[in-house]
Length: 252
Image (cartoon, rainbow, N blue to C red; front, side, top):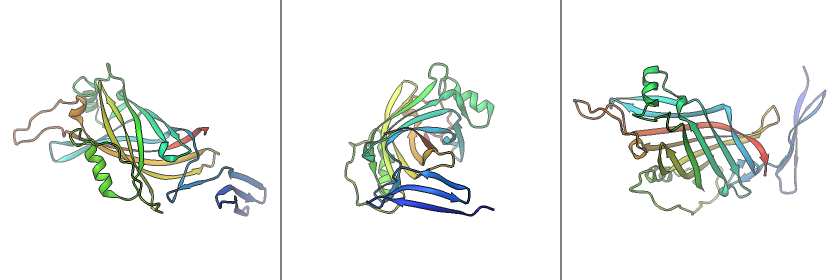
């Protein structure tokens, strides 16, 4: 077996500039750019990143018959993430192919693709474009407020106050506009940053997860059936759950 160790080089500010793997056969550089720390979180360097097709999930959840959850996902979609020199100035644009929806039930999937719901023939994509990003640390009350903002009756202006730096996981509120069919509405995502590093293939990557909740009827997805015992066949509230990795395409 080869003897292996890791060496790190630090710059004058104490930031990692090079991390190398050293074996008895030589040295392989794993990270030759500084790792930035912002609000106690290791963040990716500035640049343009794209969502890794092999490491993503665009999921959703809705109530069925008022008693259980049905989960589904979109198999195809992408995103471009621009990380700014100032991380708070970062931005996201994303799209989802509506015809790729699946709940692992063919009959239900055909119905979701029909004009009753997504109308994939006339509206092949769902789009999202961010309008702002705010550091939110571990404040669950702020996350609750962000979910309330997705109700157009309670939506307020952007909040710009930033709490003191923390060593907690990187958590943010990403504000943006969601377009479903021919309806465009503001929607906030609560985002947790998973970390940044260089992978074994030499690619700079970072991971994240994001959640939000919307009222589907706000986007024209109004089909339903009233139940004799009260309530509806399909829940109106939709929980959206996104997770993935992004790969650096163009350094800033």
